Amino acid sequence: MKKLSLTVLLFALSTLALAQQQPAKPPAPPAAPAPPAATETKPAARPDDVQSISAIVNAVYDVISGPAGERDWNRFRSLFIPEARLIFNIATPKGDVVRRVMSTGDYAQRTVPIFMKEAFFERGIANRVDRFGHIAQVFSTYESRHEKDGAPFARGINSIQLVYDGQRWYIVTILWDQESPGNKIPEQYLTGTSAD
View (tube, rainbow, N blue to C red):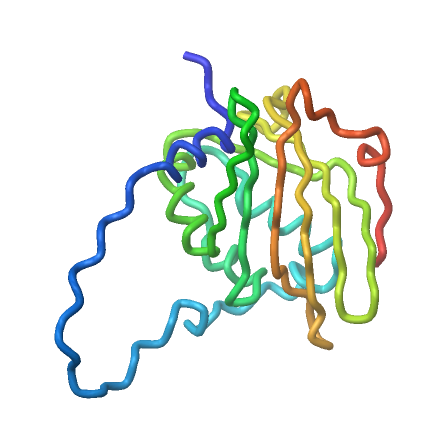
């Protein structure tokens, strides 16, 4: 059976219906609200993962790649600010563009069933970096594989926004689009430079 790309599988998972909210209840006495997910204690990052723009971009590819099985989601979360978003865009067969916005927790939840069943390896093949002060933008062209040294089954571009807090880099957003017959990666994004 032909394996589907991770983007297509993510889209399929994203279309599952969400549980409907319960009807509103009468107001209860004020209570201390539970902390939102964005303020949960974050795991500490590996120093080598966040010492430079290149290091953190390489780390995000490394942590989601591997044979079928678990990923290190604490390491994954340590690369991002708590409010970070991961956003994919795909074109349907009719040409409509569908978008899904996820937190780091959403991304983990949606990909765990896929990663547990299938090997997935992704790596950047070219990075184009723009930096100003404490912010940076990386257009990272990627290739996805079912085997570490296998032929790519998909390519695309991750647009990665980062911030530097004076000590380390954090990912704020990853927005990506996948290559298709009508959406080929331009030559200028197949070679790149580093700002480190």
